[in-house]
Length: 135
Image 1 (cartoon, helix red, strand yellow):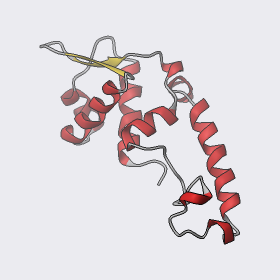
Image 2 (cartoon, helix red, strand yellow; image 1 turned 90 degrees about the vertical axis):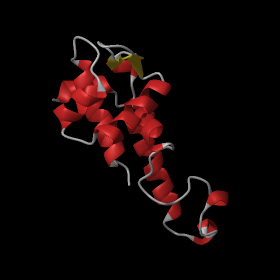
Image 3 (spheres, helix red, strand yellow; image 1 turned 180 degrees about the vertical axis):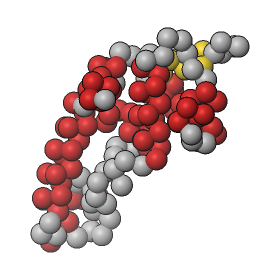
């Protein structure tokens, strides 16, 4: 599945953080987004580890964007929170890595592979700034 809850929550958090005047903690973000604090905290930590977010400690701590919204691609965000590049299909991008070992006789594999490539390019060029502007 391309957009999981983790990806959705990551993107929603980034949208909120992009307009915040100061860092926001995971409790505030989870309350604003009405989602699980523990699940969101893991997502925020992974985004901080990938240097998309900056984490601040202390009483006024929380998270803030570390990069400009125009420098945060949706492919990067989704890959970080999912732990792998997002995929629309179960098909492997490589014939030799096909889970069923049948890519060489699969008539739809070339089409799905091309489609996934186009989706990857779209997600790489789609930035947080693009999403914010669409709101």
